Length: 274
Image (cartoon, rainbow, N blue to C red; front, side, top):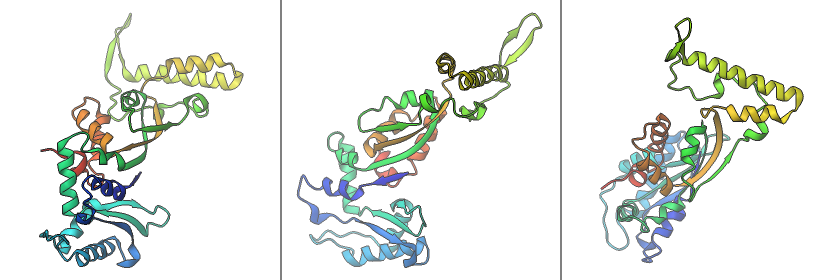
């Protein structure tokens, strides 16, 4: 996952009123080498912020903010990205009380006042079933998605139960009674036959290169087929998704929103309410 441009978004937030001098946020890179660990590095950042602002702004505004409060805020919200090569460096974004207060007012005022949120970008890899992607695809504005190709790669690997979403699957669920033996048919029975059919079509396609086998495989492929996509959006899109899908019956949306709640400043920007 990659989150970026907090600095640009909050700089733009102050453009309409030319109020950049009131900005009290700090953005940058920190190294665990500064303090030996993440906590040490964050304390260095917190100390730097407090030293720079001296607990007050140039226009006379005063904030009851101590170094410990800044550290707690950074530790809970401010780590934006890690250097995934060695995990010794990380990008941080500390939103000061003045900037954060302005952001909250703009968000609660609604569109277009909250448009700065469109400039906080997020990119992530998501593996989800096709039936979930169909709903996610309704969010077209401000999003980009590159998927693993069903056309090119569907026949490359064996088709097993692991290829499908089964998080809350109950194989013993009864479907109907079979005649003439009155034997209960379960979801396990259905899936066994379905996977066998899909795998047989895949093998026949690889053996013969007859596109009809591939077409039939695509035709009967269950909607629970897991597909990986690299998905890019912004915080405004995430805010819309969060509230529109908050009580959705699909467990995948609840899992997605649980992930959103852990993003930097999610509580103050994405699922902020009056």
